[in-house]
Length: 298
Image 1: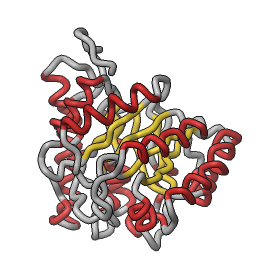
Image 2: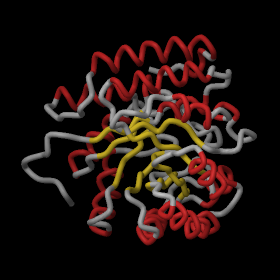
Image 3: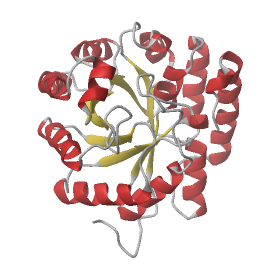
């Protein structure tokens, strides 16, 4: 347990809206609008942005322009732009397009992993053995993400030991960080505390990030609980957009503007200008709302 009387006064925010948020919008968002929003996010002070996914367009049509997005965004700053990859082919495409950081997702739930990636958790972890050295050879940072860390819409409860097993595989693969994803917003504060205490004890040298959905409107409560225990890296989505298309009941992520507002109010620095972020949220809602109003959260 990393809790102490004197909390550190800063956290890292990873913006995932351009990937996790946009992928669930049904109408096609023009590439230039995606690029505009990503560039606005970068000027708000966010230093880490998940810009897209190199997933086959058959599965995520919205992100079929991943290569063009990566080419067109302003990458001359100190912002790290990452992309999600579902497999080794995704990594190859990321490398071809000069992506500096990739995120490889494996679910702690076998059923959800099959639904998302058409293979078992064990099969995805076997592929990790090839992905890790290839990423390293090409100078690409590799992050791991564990879906269904707090429960699965298909299987229900997910044993902590299964989350630990996936985290151990990521640690063995020498990823730079592991994100624990509450894929459909099933987590509650006590569960967050208990899981993090186990993982912090097991992986003292492995940076852990938290990715909460706001399905039951307690996403920020879970963020605060995780922060109290010692978490310092949080993923969130502009305007609260997001959700896994293959996970029933995943309507949206914790909104980045809400997360930043909360931390600023309690004296925790994020490095983000809230006013700029709010303007970006307004523009994002206009763009997405004009295409698919049912997917505009926040």
